[in-house]
Length: 167
Figure 1: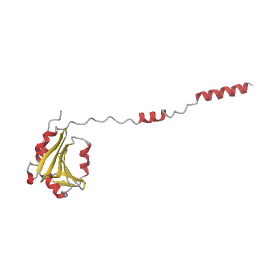
Figure 2: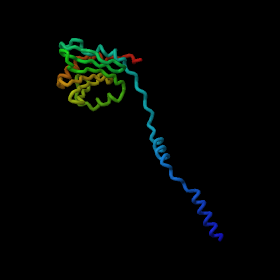
Figure 3: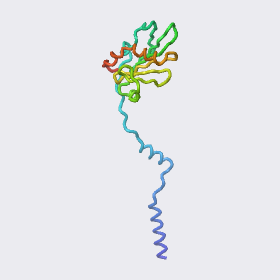
Figure 4: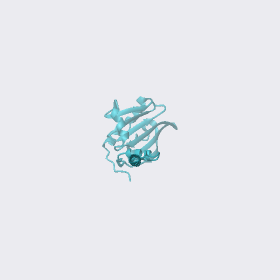
C-alpha cells in the first residue's frame, strides 16, 4: 500500500511538472516578437522639386515643347511634346541615399561619366552625382534618342548641385 501511494504521489508530481504546449495564439506571438526588424534609418532630406527645374532641357530644345506636370519634394516630371503629341516623359528624382541609387551599381554602360540603365524597352536613366536619377521614358523614341535627350539636361550643373533640403 505504501508503495502504491509513493507511485501515485510520484505520478502526480511528474504530471504537475509537465510543461504545457503553447496555445495556437502563443506560437505566432512568439515568432512575431522574435522577428522584429532592425530599426530603419529615417530617409535623408531631399531637395524641393522646383529647384530641379533649371536642369531640364531648355523649353524649345529641338523645336519640342516642354511642359512641367509634377513637382514634389525630391521629384520633378515634365512632358516633352512635338506638335501637341507627347513624345517623352522627362524626370529628375533626388534619391539622396535611398535604395533607388543602388541599382546603378550594376550598370554596365555609362553616358559620359554617369552609370546608365535601360530597365525597360521604353526607359533610359542615369545617376548623376551619385544622387540624382535622370530618366527619359518614351513609347516612340529609340534607346539612342533617349540617350540624346538625357544629354540635353544640364548634367554638369546637376552633378555640382548642393541643394537645400525640402521643407
